[in-house]
Image (cartoon, rainbow, N blue to C red):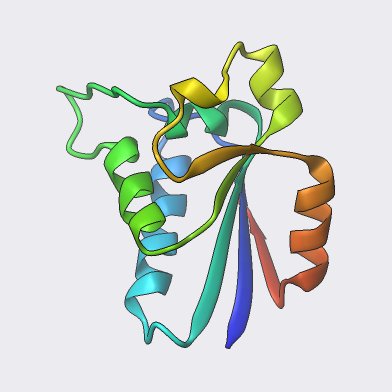
Length: 119
């Protein structure tokens, strides 16, 4: 089994970078379930993609739904604690399955991963 870590930095909805990051994650999970162990770590403004109660009437996609699918597929989703704190985001604001994490956890995930993608 290949261990992959995706570290996302891109702001949600401002560009399509975070959307495409999640599309890649979903495509990886659509492969043989045993083929990849995937983890997501959100930094900078990417943390806003994991907030509850998103309303996106003008867009054809909803990042909250994409994160929820990944969470249901047992993909761990951590948000940078420092990034969340400076932006006033706390655990109560997050979708189910997303948690506040630390740089120490990111370091461990990075060392354990076979591949790391930064988007």
